[in-house]
Structure formats: C-alpha cells, structure tokens
Amino acid sequence: MFLYLLGLLAFLFLYRWFRERKRVGNESDKYVYITGCDSGFGNLLARHLDKLGYHVIASCFTEKGEDGLKKVCSLRLSTIHLDVANTDSVNKAAATIKTQVGEKGLWAVVNNAGVSVPSANCDWLTIEDYKSMLDVNLNGVIAVTLSVLPLIKKARGRVVNVASVFGRISAIGGPYCVSKFGVEAFNDSLRKNLKPFGVKVLCIEPGFFKTSVTDVKIVGESVRKAWAKLPQEVKEEYGHDYLDKVDEMLLKKMENMPDMDLMKVVHCMEHAIAAVHPRTRYSPGWDAKFFWIPLSYMPTFISDYLLLKDSVKPEKCVI
Image (cartoon, rainbow, N blue to C red; front, side, top):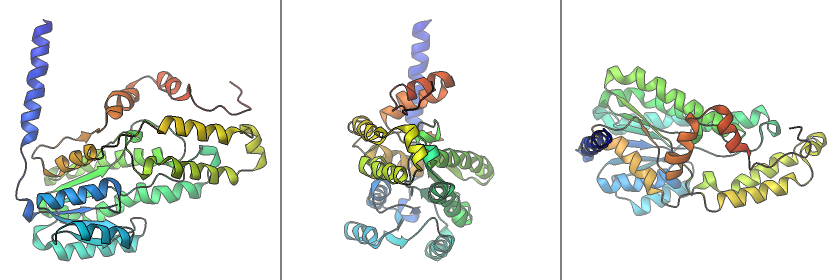
C-alpha cells in the first residue's frame, strides 16, 4: 500500500512538473506593467523579462531607479514615475500605458511596490502610522489593479499580487501583516470575479529575502522612532532597557535568516506571468514552505507559543 501511495505521489509530481513547463509564448507581443522597480524583486523582474523579450513598463518612485534600469535594459523597456499612494499618479500612469499598449491590451500587471515601515508594537503606533503603510501596501495594490483592469481584460492577461507569508500568519505587530492579509483577501476575491473573463489572478507569498523590507537598520530605526514618541507611562511598562533588547533580538534573528537569492522570487513571478497553467499561489523560500505556511495551519495556541517563546518581554509583564 505504501508503495502505491509513493507511486501516486511521484506521478502527481511529474504531472504537475510537465503541465507547468508550457509557456504562452509570443513574448515580444506582450506588455507587462511592474510597480516598485527601484530595487529588489521589481528591479530584477524588469531586467529578467526584458531579456526574455517582453515589453516591460517599469514604474519607479525615483528618477535614480528609472535611470538605472534604462542603462542596463533594451529599448523595449520603458520607465514611468509612479507613487502608488497617489491617485493622480496612478491614473496618469494608467493613461500613459493605455496609449502605449493600444488594442493589444496589457498582458500582466505585477503589484510589487511595498514598504515595511513604520514597524513597531501595535500599542506604540497611531492610526496615521497604519494609514501610511496601508496606502502603499494595500490601497496602492487595489488602485493600480483597478486602473488597468480594462486593459488586462482586453488581453485576457494576468494580475500578479506580491503578498507575503505574513499575509498568512501575523507574526509581528504593526500594519505590515494587516496590509498583506488585505492583499490576500483582495487577490482571492479578484481571482473569482475575473475568472469568467479569462483573466488569471496569482499571488506571490515570499518568505524572508534580503531586501529593504527585511533590512535590520531600516526596521530598527522605525522601532526607535516609535519608541521616542511614546508617553513616559508606556515606556515604564516596557522597561528602560526594552529597546536595547529588541535591537539585540533583531540582529540575532535577522542576521542569517534572509535568503540572498532573490531570483527564487523572480522566477515565481515570471512563471505566473508566462506559464499556460500558472499556480494560484507561490511561496518562494524554504522558510515559507517548511515553517511559515505550515505554522499558519496549526492551532492558534501552538503558533502563538512558537512565535512568543523567544520574544522580548515587557518589564511589567503580568503573565
């Protein structure tokens, strides 16, 4: 019986591998719009797709990001300034793209732009801190998608949303996990809504990779800024040395955890764009596959214990 099950699993694995190899082709006829191309996953994806022959429309927040891509990519790639949190900027970019793609429509939009700060304990932050991140990580994803959806439907193309394993389990305080859970919900509802139109909606859920999102200096600075604004009463609840302990914990946890190979994520993005039969979800990174995703299915008391057992305790902790 065991051998039959093993054989069945092997057959299913080979079947999926064979099925997922087929590509849609005609890359030179397809336009792909990517947000957040200044650095990280978006920058690498823009370069990768350009080499494969796609017409890449790479949106950047800075002129430096635009100039950097133009220097290393072909003339097929075009750049556009975009602030995903600004409605006028989103609409202006969509109008430019509509003119550029013409009757072919837009084959894919990749919602990659995102930020990781402000980051701190929930009771250290204000509603404005939450709004500033949600405007980029969640509302920005929705705004960009809706702005080009008619062009995607025309091409019967793809919407690729970059969420996170922290859209499956909330492991840290602050708005980051909230924003990524929201992306997951938007992705799921959009996938069902657009299926009748032949549009595929895919989700990328990376684990920890070496990007600005996991930069200890950036996250640590955000925590210190939030601490500096706290009332003295709250600081006394946590203890005068709490911040030093958090810095030590961040360095210890984050020093070796992030994966340096960003192409693992880029290859998942490319597959979502180019495969005839893309996956509904991609979870690049060993930590995503073998820790975070399994942890998200565990009973709450187990996941809470595992996530809290090494956390820094406040001085006035009552449990």
